[in-house]
Image (cartoon, rainbow, N blue to C red; front, side, top):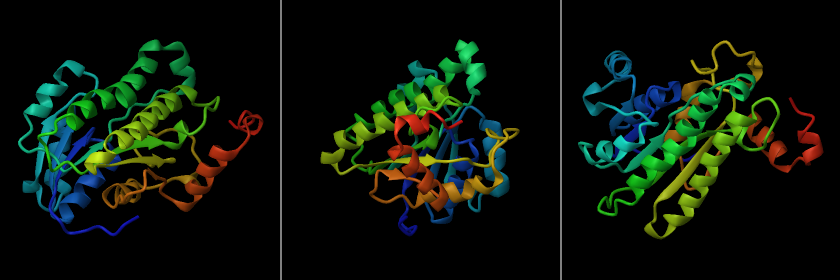
Length: 246
């Protein structure tokens, strides 16, 4: 992870009400950046900014719904400033057993994690009039590294997002725009509250957010040394071994 630099940028955070995104807002503002924080939960987000962010005047809160695709172009064209950096942090979780029986929940994960990202990011990157665009960061998950029986529906939506970002990185290479995917393990957040997860592997949202704000040129960012090991074990293990994992 590169050190955080003190150069003012315009940061667009999509899905800005997530715990990691909120911490990223704080960190971006602390280094002097202007943040456009977009979420469905605008009142909650405004309250967070007013209570927690050191310079709330640097944050603009806007309404954005990742799954209302027809409104994405209008949203982008109505931005007060075009961004230097875009962070896609929208997320939705349904446990695997429920998702197997509830198509609506499974489909929503597909829409939020993949279709929503493709819809809005395609609009952003094809706006070649925005010469200041320099980086796109997508928040993915270790669940998308390999299919596992405990979470393969959620994991497949994150895998699709990661593959889209990998291709987008190549597509934008000639324009010198960096694309990063942050592949996180278990995060202590409202989305994981109530799940039975190993305490020794839990990461704090601010720890993940520091990896977002300090992203360098590397495509895949895996925060936490334990999760780096797990990432490579999942990547390199034979299928017969992965099949035995929960």
